[in-house]
Amino acid sequence: MFRFRFGYGLHHGPRVFALLLLVLLTAALVVGIVALVRMSRLPAPRLQAGSWPTEVPRVDPALSELRVRYARGELSWEEYAQRAANLGLSVNPGSGSYIDPNQPPPAS
Image (cartoon, rainbow, N blue to C red; front, side, top):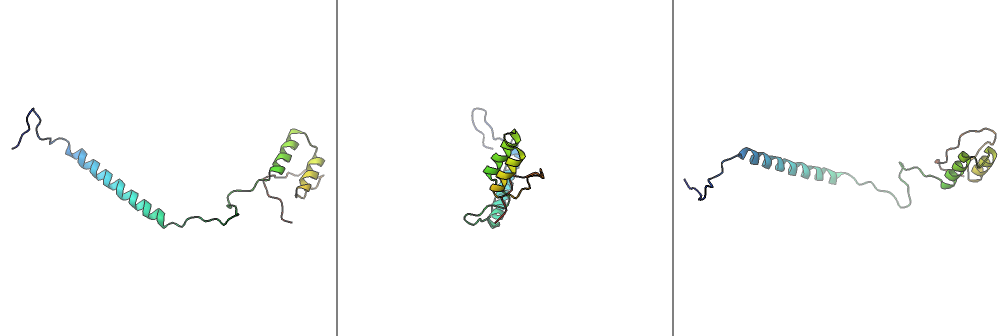
């Protein structure tokens, strides 16, 4: 049999680890290719120009600021209700009901 000089013989060591590494890399490559093929077949979500996604609610910054000022006590309920009504919300000034500023104003 052929031998190398300087004490280096043929390495018959842990071939199992090299074989296991080869199998794992091959499996990872196959899984990656399958994942890419499946992702390429999914339809891409498309939005029309100027449209909002349905998951993202529109926030009216004027109503948010109005709510913050009312929470700080800078406005009375009557002032708050009047200004909210001016911004497009129908509010009964004497009801004291909660107005959610994150809701878009009703369509006129």
